[in-house]
Amino acid sequence: MKNKAFFILIFMLGLVGYSQTKLSDSEQKAFKQKVLKAAQSTKSIQSDFIQTKHLSVLENELVSEGKLYFKSPNLVKWEYIKPFQNVAVFKNDKLLVNNEGKKDEMDLSANRLFRSLNTLIVNSIKGDMFDETQFDISYFGISDGYMVNFVPKDKRLKKFIAAFELKFEKSSAQVSEVKLMEPNKDFTTIIFKNKQTNVSISDSVFNN
Image 1 (cartoon, rainbow, N blue to C red):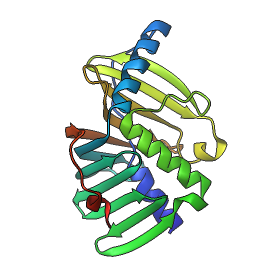
Image 2: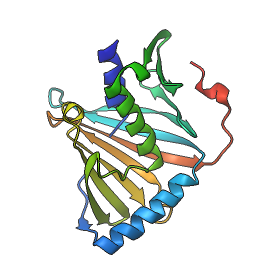
Image 3: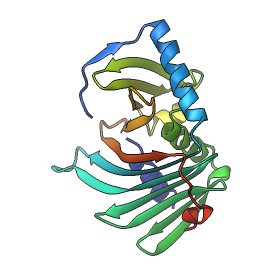
């Protein structure tokens, strides 16, 4: 179950080349203030997503489509629709998985690493990730917004995640894309589409 849970966690985080310019200290400060203000005002998110996973052992990329639901403070649901129907729900310190009718449950509170990954997922969705005690962080301006690169400092986490990047929209300062890079150079990219914020989402959506 731990391997399956980690596989799902890896699948839910996200190589695309961008023309980028490193932000100055003053630009970084202004950008972070804008992002944190947007994150603090975000109580819910509903969005379509397209996930692309590149594996060095496969010739073709694995592409999935689905819907994301987030409700403050920490309810998250990833509903995969294509090519297979799978659901992963983070709720009450648990990871609830429904894999085409087969259900599994994992207690995140009993595992520090998975609890950290859960926090990473929630904060990535909101864009509230600027913790320099946990990450080496680099800030860049790109053609249609901003990109921030995070390298974990925790040795255990680095065994699974080499780095990850968040791409932010210029106008809204919200996360539009997540990319996760694994130590073996495999990577996963998630692009959010048709995102709606602060919409009414029933707690029943997070039932599994």
